Image (tube, rainbow, N blue to C red; front, side):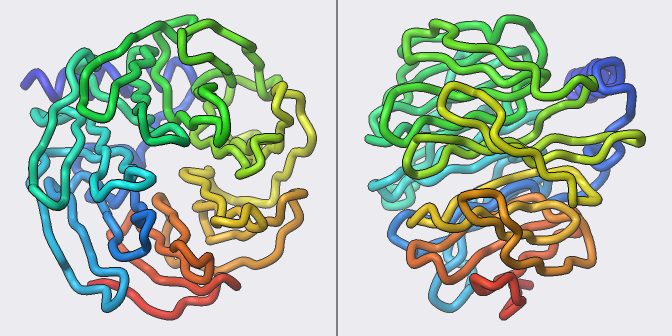
Length: 319
């Protein structure tokens, strides 16, 4: 009952903020929210509100391991060098956690809002993990899951995504605005990304650290925007070609291509030019490149897990 009450509270807040009900986030909809490829390319992880985190072999796409995690897994992120994965949850009796794939040890992360979290990421050294929760709190943990510090995101609006700078201990968090923080919790900059009250959903630093990209929800009157920003959070370019929201963004290892999950799989270059587009029967939510940058895995609103090549052409699927 408590979980249902929190869910209704979350929906009401989102409706007031963005003047719409996020029907796709309905608790009874079975969605694969997130996917990520391990840094060594051997495994892929997929999660959503199906009560299970699944790990697949990157070689043959067969199920390797699974872990029961109740309700919604919102975001997963492999450690940059260790065989472990960070998991963010919401509407769940299971806390966000770090799972060691070698030992199956699960370390729960304390201090996160009871309403859960949607943003999670390792820093460039793998020494720190950031979690951004649904009450506007940013929490920094060490690799053992110990809470180092926490601070507020200017307000209590839920944070939808967070990403570390690839070379510095600077975090970009998105929700109603774009906000840059240092690791001590000092606010470096706060930017309203467009004049309309539209919620941001995704963010990805470029491998160079010289710029980052955000994707937002859009609404009935305004198209979803993919926006390129320099390191100081000054707008470089806005792109409005999508018919759906940008749920997740990810760069390939070279930083030459950005994959965006929306109503289609779209691949952009570093200047924001559309390179390839792969049609999807339903909305894509999770997206990740493999180590070599020649394969992309996506997960979707209708539980489809699709393997694509670097030209956004479908080459396989996982049942």
